[in-house]
Length: 469
Image (cartoon, rainbow, N blue to C red; front, side):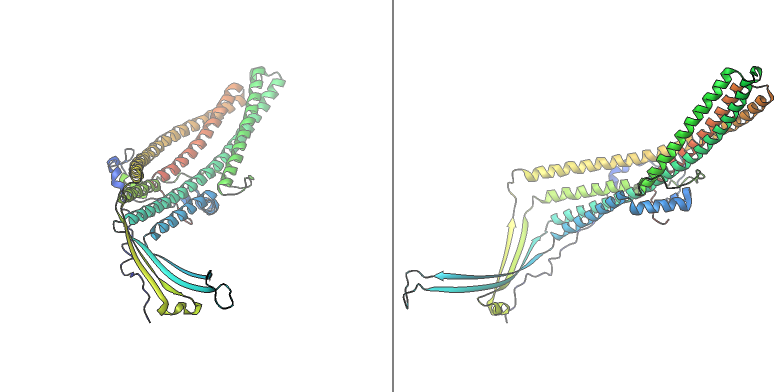
């Protein structure tokens, strides 16, 4: 029995595509030796920053959001799509094998050749065939390898984009949770302040109705006390509305219908320690947006190489083997085997300038990705420095307002004592209580701003978040 002719495959597999090397050195000129706002150079990054801010309750909410939020599903499917594209790009470098079966039946009439009884002679014929064909374009210059390497880098970029989306969603949940906590504290302060205003109004009204003008019961003081009560009511309603909005925003992030039924923290947590900042150069190795930009720059470099190699000749080998017979049962008989071998070389000569235009487009895209990488790196350093300087000035503001709040509390107590003993006026009491309430509210807002800035600092430093941490 004769052997089937099959194209040898001992060197067809060829070289596998390599992951493009890092091109982060293109932005190395923008890397400072140390941070301006801190002399610290502690290495590492805190992956447990969510639990350090809000404990188990907040961690549970973040984990739920990461598992059900539609934006995360979109980011995940983009990664899957990029991985599939990389696999598709690699398929063109491998032999293409196909098999086929065909059959035909025909009738031929021999006009003008009468035989026998004078009828027109004819013949019926049948033909059956089976074939196996192999074709392969030799990637001698590495054009297909460059394309596959670019697709791999693009898939890695999508993976970094997924990391960034995960950290961003965690930060959004934390900020929404903090907004609910601040609103709850502000409501408590507004309710306490409103209770004091009502008490003051009752005292001023009683003195006004009893014509005790000298003891703080004048008409102007009574109207001022009424104004403060009405204003306090509006403030309380504003705080309650802010809480309802914050709760619904948190529910939306967790892919829940915004009913306002979710219950979060009743007060803001304590300020956690400042996270380790490390060295500026470490930022290039851990921030997902920088790593994504670098991978896209690496991919554009390989695309440009692919465009350059498109000017080179291409080689293709084909082989076909099978059998052909007029009887179906003979298809497996090697005596009826047929085969063919062919090779071809193609050299681009003139394609209307499309190859040159495409190479220029790829070169422009490579320069664009380089600029985007440099912009991303500079922006990342700026975000860290801004978060660090904001941290410093928020701490100073918080301490100054805290000192003022203590003094305002003492002044309010003194004014109330003076008014109760008849030596103080209602206007001084109302002003002192308003200052006290305002400063206490500022303290809560500043505390929330400090916590928000911690979230910003974690993101700026490339702080990742892993479910269950």
